[in-house]
Amino acid sequence: MKKHSLFPICYGIVLTAFTVYILLDTFVLRDTYQTNTIQMNTSMFENISVSAELTEPVTEAETIPETESQNHRRKHHQEEKEVSDTTEPTTEEPVQSISDVSYQDENIQITLTEYYENNSKIYVADVQVTSAEYLKTAFAEDTYGKNVTAKTSSIASAHNAILAINGDYYGAQERGYVIRNGVVYRSTKGTNDVLCIYADGTLKVVNPDEYTTEELVSQGVWQAFSFGPELVEDGQITVTQNQEVGKAMASNPRTAIGMIAPNHYVFVVSDGRTNESEGLSLYQLAQFMQKLGVTTAYNLDGGGSSTMYFNGEVINNPTTTGNIKERGVSDIVYIS
Image 1 (tube, rainbow, N blue to C red):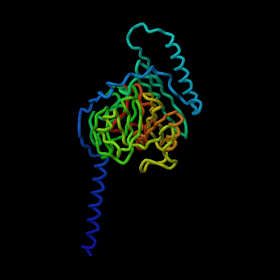
Image 2 (tube, rainbow, N blue to C red):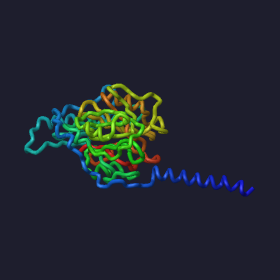
Image 3 (cartoon, one colour):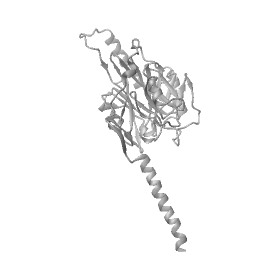
């Protein structure tokens, strides 16, 4: 009898130990592969001309209602801009303008807008740059590795970011292309389609079975992410109403990036898991991105990772274990 009962006990101990190890190895144990990852392969920009003059940001204020306070902030910003437009600069140095909801210099224009849709607060940064070289990425602690994490705001501050959102949390995965600032860090393909940001300012989602990372860089890929899925292609929604990321809940905090035109992007973050904000499904996120007028949109890591940082502050409400606070992530996308 004792021999018969000993086997299931030992088996249970071994199985539990193995499960704990897998969980720790996947989500906790840190493994550093490369440090001081601040190099940038900017050679792909050498034959690309600077884009035309920055234009007014595209918004959907008529189709997506704003709150009264948000409308007041927008009007205040417009009044400030009208005054600044009539004032000639007194020096020859580049003009730089920044407020709570906007930033502009000769190469970068950012306008922030808050929306409330599907019982959720959504934060949109309309971003225009004269070159995709101003759309950069950074790793936590400037280190490429597994489970190397830091808060989005900390990484952004360390890199003097004007605007930042969390990336695709590459460090929680063993596979999936990782190309950052023109440098290849992981060439092992995963099962998800890859978002490519090209040096000419365009966004395109590709099948990793069709390209190697070396081929992508040779084609001018500046950044590549492997979270997904693609939300919008050629202006059309590409996810179904019931589609989700793994075992994620239907309503979640979300982070996405989209392109309206080359070098004209939208960074989108939604709150969720709070009384004020329920969160969005993938399909609701895709619908919202489509309303913003994007031709291409892609889902980045969401949930507790979803964070938007602007002008030294986190402007959304990240949720971690039921509390409003940032959690550590592997990487960020930022403008600087």
